[in-house]
Amino acid sequence: MLPLNGDKRRHQRKRSITPFAYRVPLGASGIQIGVTTNISDSGMCIYSDANHNEGEIIEIRSSLPVSHLWAAVRWAKKDAADIYKMGLMFCVK
View 1 (cartoon, rainbow, N blue to C red):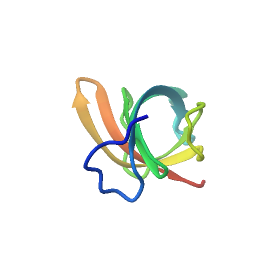
View 2: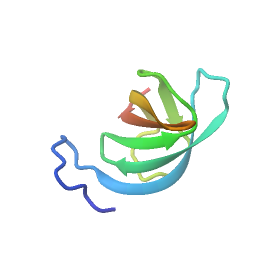
View 3: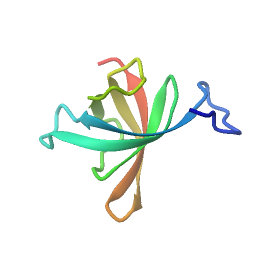
View 4: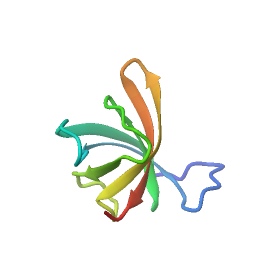
């Protein structure tokens, strides 16, 4: 994973294009699939065909190289037809 240039965040983001599985514990949608675009010690940016609301908690159900299994949606926006880009912040449930 290569660091992203010009990044001024607390934790350095690294480019990582990796598919992973996740679920929304309070939702009835079952397992979802997302793709990371970058990842850091505090969160990651993903693409998914499922839209989630700010503050929603997701459970990471994959072998991504992260120390947390839970993340909160910090922001979400529609990127293309039926594809959503989201910023996730790792958290403790």
